[in-house]
Each structure stands twice: as C-alpha cells, then as structure tokens.
Amino acid sequence: MKKLIALLTIAGMMTFGLNHIVLAQDTTEEPTEQAAEQPAVTEVAETTLEMQVADEEPLTFHEVIKEKFIEGGPEFMGIVLLTLIFGLAISIERILYLTLSTTNTKTLLASIDEALKNEGVEKAKEICRNTRGPVASIFYQGLLRYDHGMEEVEKSIVAYGSVITGRLESGVSWISLFIALAPMLGFMGTVIGMIQAFDDIAAAGDISPQIVASGIKVALLTTVFGLIVAIILQIFYNYIISKIDNLVNDMEDSSITFIDIVSKFAKK
Image 1 (cartoon, rainbow, N blue to C red):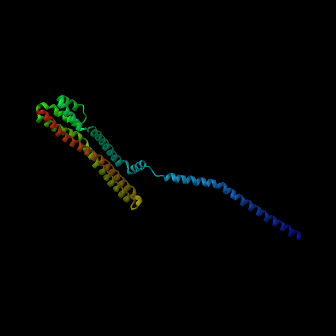
Image 2 (cartoon, helix red, strand yellow):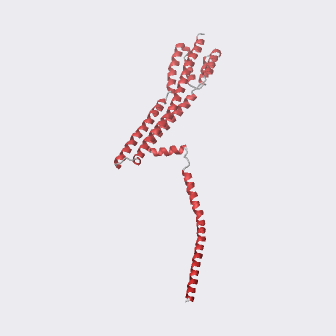
Image 3 (cartoon, one colour):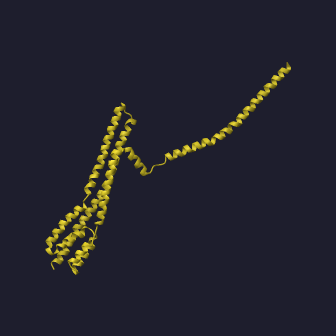
C-alpha cells in the first residue's frame, strides 16, 4: 500500500513538472513568434500610411481643372472650351495686328515735314511707303492727291481713315459673341443638370443628397466654367478696345497735324 501511494505521488509530481516545462516552453516560444510577426505588421502599416499620404497629396491646378472638366460632362464643357479657344485665337490675332499697327507719329510727321521742305512730295511718299502702320497709309493716300488741292487731300484722309478704322475693329464682334455665348452655354448646362436631378428623384421616388448630387454638380460646374471663359475673354476684349481707341485717337490727331503741314507747303 505504501509502495502504491509512493508511486502515485511520484507520478503526480512528474506530471506536474512536465506541465510546468511545457508551459514554460510555450511562454518562451510565443514572444519569438510575435517578434517574428511584428516586422511584417510594421511593414504593412508603413505601406498603408504611405498610400494614405500619397492619396492625400494636393493636386496641381492643371489636374484639378482636368478633373472638374471631366466631371462636368463633355457635352457642354466641350462647347464652352471651344468658345474659349476661338475667342483666344481671335484675341491674340487682334493684339498682334494692333501692336504691329502702332507707329511713332511724331517721328513720322517730322520726317514728312523735312521731306516736303527739302526734297518735295515724292520723298514724303517714299517715307510713308517705307513706314509700317495705318497712319503712314493714310498720309500716303493724302499725298497722292497733293496736286489736286487741299480739299481732295482732306477727303481722301477722312475716307481712308474710315476704312482703316474698320480694319482695326475687324473680328472684335466675334469676341463679343463668345463672351455672351459662354455663360449662356453654362446656364443651359445648369438647366439640363437640374432636369437630370429631378428625373433621378422621380425615378427613385425619394429625395436624398446621393440622388440629386450628380445632377446639381454638373449644373454648377458648367455654370462656373462658362463664367470663367466669359471673364477671360472680357479682359482681352477690353484690352483690344482700348488699343483700338488709342490708335484711332492717334490717327485723328496726327491727321490734323499732317493737313496743317501739307497746307503750309501747298500755299507756297
């Protein structure tokens, strides 16, 4: 009996000891596995953070415009873009033409005065032919009628001045048309977008921001782009009109001085 109790005691002690050993091994192995898994988890977290940072980087102005243009829909946004392209093309052409039409009238009048005083009408005509700009062309037309009297000279200057003014203003009406057309197209896109929003509401049978958001967004984007185009073209239009006014005023003032110079020598 004592031997049986002793054997059971030894067996119990061995079993208890083995359990402690196994638990100790499990405890030592778990940190190792956790330590092995920790770098992988850290790498995944870092990759996710980098992706979030990349997604949160601010878009450039060009990318924002492109994104909003696509969201606004190609139907009306494309037409508004065409009005901007055509309007800018005409504006740039007019600005170049008006810039090349600018002449130093004081120098030209002084040269004509000197030529008429020393070398005669033919030299004055040659100076006008070799000078760029509408003012020189008007003076040349006046000098062609120098022998017909001052009345004919004045008539030719007035008539040809009207022709030159028409050439300076050529194409400006198209810019004005595009200025009026761009916001009208934007407002049309607004109306169509609102109709689309109400159609979506009718189809869903419910009013919710998710349903009407797309239609309203298209409406607002087309309006904004139409107004932006109109503002840009309006700036160019006003600049062109101011240059035309300056050129016309310069032509009128210099024409008066030119008539005075010619009449002074015609009397002789």
